Length: 478
Image (cartoon, rainbow, N blue to C red; front, side, top):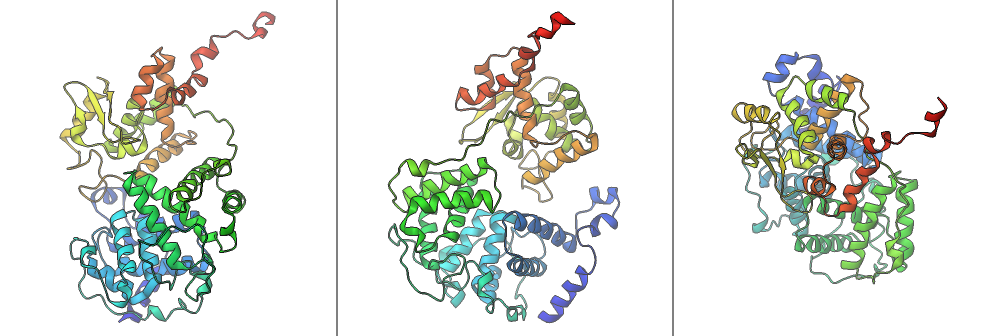
């Protein structure tokens, strides 16, 4: 049964899966018909390929990851967010630790779901691979597939190539293990070649970091950023390098720049995350060496001209896409704030839009211009989601950030407008235009939700009305 299943999947891959949907469906069909199972698989795998490349996953490991993800989605029709706990348990038992690692990667980066990641961690920590599953770890989600078929895929070279598995075949440790300031130099056959440290110690440290983050009620993005940065740091850590944390810290920053090719600003985000990990989990005493940051230079925010803004908000034919661009620019919203807008956040009578739990978990209100209000009212009456103002394919689930970015970039490409800076450039343009209109900087700070006025002051450097009013000395010569 399994061999037949894999043969069917390989036959389907003989075509161009990424373009199949576009070649066989008209524009009208794309609007009126949801993708079927094969089309959904193509969408998820395309997203997986892009993320795996960004994460610098080794080619051989990426192929194995992709194969298991493909099989997992193929067996479970529908949304990967609605997978019964029993199915995930069976999948992990069947493919062992590497199966758990595959699902953890998939739900961490691709189908982002913190609930599923925590459940997978609970399964592996509780030894579910050997058949013991904690009762409290069950996920209450609908049944999509009963009695998944057995597979011969495990006969692949998962165990014969241990060098390509970064976290495989390791026994998880209890989350209550003590702080570790120097990783013990144990010889173990279960430690991965990439990590160079026992997997049980690595897992215990990450569990402690999760506890520290959750106890502070940090946002989901902060949680993901801290865990990803610490995981990448531990992947390169060796028992030898752990004897000098300062050197290990600095060498890691250089590696991120020279090998991973991250931008200095991204490296500094990782540095702050690792600093938190070292101080709160490893109990390393803070010092100036842990405050090392890379010089980023001074870059000004990208601002669109009034003509380009007018074209951007009028070009999309889809009312949802048009309103997304209108609200982003007209209210100066961040990407995540647009994504999480709900119908009850619109106060039509007072012409106010409420931003709930914005950056820093802060609420704020912004004006809803009377010229923009009719478009919002029309959307509320015809097209608005049941839970979110803008929903994707799945009812009750907010539109993805990637889709919102695509709305912006696709419109820019159509108009031959530079899309550098992403949709966030509309927020920059909003702030700059207000400053050029003479709005007080303090009001702009409140509308943008900036904690410090210094953040808002950057727009004084790009406000054109101050610069263009200055006469150049060449004026007297011409």
